Image (cartoon, rainbow, N blue to C red):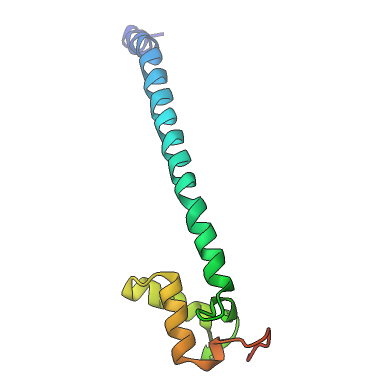
Length: 112
């Protein structure tokens, strides 16, 4: 082995414990962040379930598979609204159900 390669690998080996410690600290921080985010999601999931069940909001009536316009599904239109206008998914669904009856499923019926 050439001397310059030997020196390079010696530096790498000397640095390895520091790199491992740094990676472990970063992993620990990421795991803490993930736990905090998961804790924030619990009440949001509960609120979402309430909204889905609320007969006034009627989010449970959204039909993503139904045809919005010329072969485009209602779900595709919601994605477009979210990406184009930075709308939330709920806002896009509600707006689409209000403006397009075919995206509003009544009593489990679809209008494909």
